Length: 498
Image 1 (tube, rainbow, N blue to C red):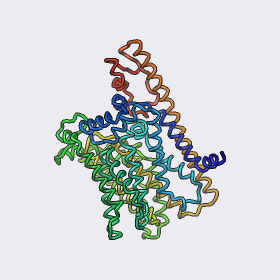
Image 2: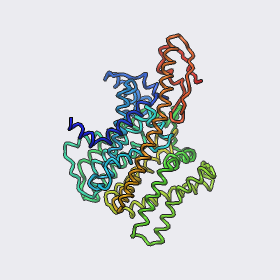
Image 3: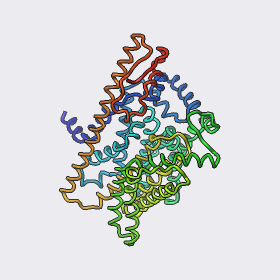
Image 4: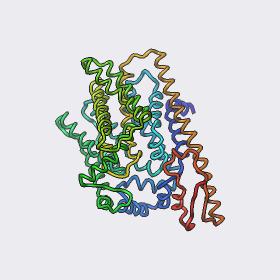
């Protein structure tokens, strides 16, 4: 008994976080495509394989994302447990990667757990409702992120400039990480393949030899990318035979899609994350103000470029309400210039403002990955916030790296440390409390919808009136007619909202 108490005390922060995420996941209603996938649910291996082939042939190459949605759609408890494990795992891997326990001894370990989990849940509601609050979106965009982060953690010695010493027994796991990460979303597939290849080249140039683990990961990535993009449906999309998705290969067509998508890509890459941008800029300014590697004039110019971005975002969004949607307008090129300067300035900050070699190299890799993930989305339709989940994770990872650098290089007084702990604790508690409040409101109405539907069907009704969700802005799709997929055995049922 005493041993159990000791284990609980040691891991109390992790247990509390896991339980908090699990409760939020339990209160997630099925919506949108979730109802369609639930009609395909099966536990039979042969039937699952058949569904996998059907999805790959007729829908897209997101083999693991789609089959996970089908498999877990009929297993509510296991589904939410799996989703919880993936989000919790993302927090833990980021924590271990960015805040090594031996270095961060000035603060309690739970402080970094709270900080990372708070950052992950500070996402805008548009991203939240299309990832954590939508089963189909979750399984197609969130798990791949964790698989890539695990690989970064396994090769963390490379970012320290050391020779990798991974046991050969890890090679099957590394191949699976490379292969599986490719089968969730197309832009993540492109990113993972490029990064895997880039890491092989980086290691070769630095150590004059290749490492078998990186080669194995690259082979897994190539194999997974082949499975993804050999899906016959991409050919139909390119030929304009898909009613939902479109691709263009002519210069004029690509330019037209670029013009149409630019505003959304910038929004979901930077503009929507005002608190993160402000924190990112603040941390960068602190580091730049302390560096002695730059002449004063150049340092102040760089600091100005970084500080302007949050101000520019606030003015264009809340004061002038500027719409950027035409290549012919001056504001388009000004806007593009601002974000390009910001990205370059932050990259420069990571290069000269961070003295720890590990954090510097990892930060540059993560920051470079942001345009690599976002750029393909400039040329495809449709796109949405869910496509940028990994971009958000990369952003907060860079922020956490900057915070780690500041905490490791700054001598803080006892009262300042206490203030930091208090602020992080308060923001974390408030963030989760707000999500609990919102999720509970929607979950109560969701259960009412299910009860009303079942009673109406038993009474033989063909038109069912359902209550509206009190917080619909946190649910991906509230159209009740999507439920007709699940209840198709009852015939033609018309679902309406009050």
